[in-house]
Image 1: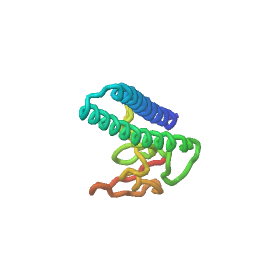
Image 2 (image 1 turned 60 degrees about the vertical axis):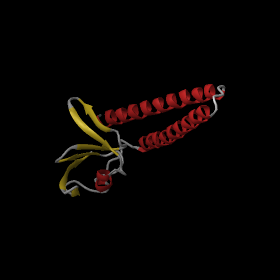
Image 3 (image 1 turned 45 degrees about the vertical axis):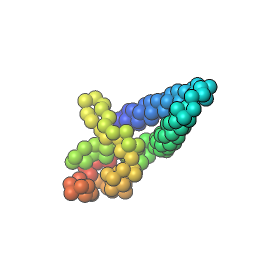
Image 4 (image 1 turned 90 degrees about the horizontal axis):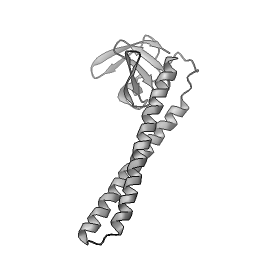
Length: 148
């Protein structure tokens, strides 16, 4: 099933993000531990401050990635609806969108799909629309051709 394959690619995207962030956090923790064993005065304090900032940034990214994972877990692929909702595969006259998370362009069997978040500009406009309805995005009229 196409939506299952797209959902799988989104999960791979999120898991890769989570692994990268966790690796960065571990490296920063190790560097911070090593930095605390040094005693080079101001240079030491600057290094520690920079590591703390990197840890904070990685922690925020981890939170975003976990939210993405939670969103993917809410998708019910077997649920059928005439209206666009989370998990819908939307074919428009411009592109084919998978309403899930912002994972960008996905390629499957030579076709391109765009994983978009419900909170993205186009996702917010598409939610609740039905086949045949139109949206206006950046002065471009986009027509919903089908919803799966």
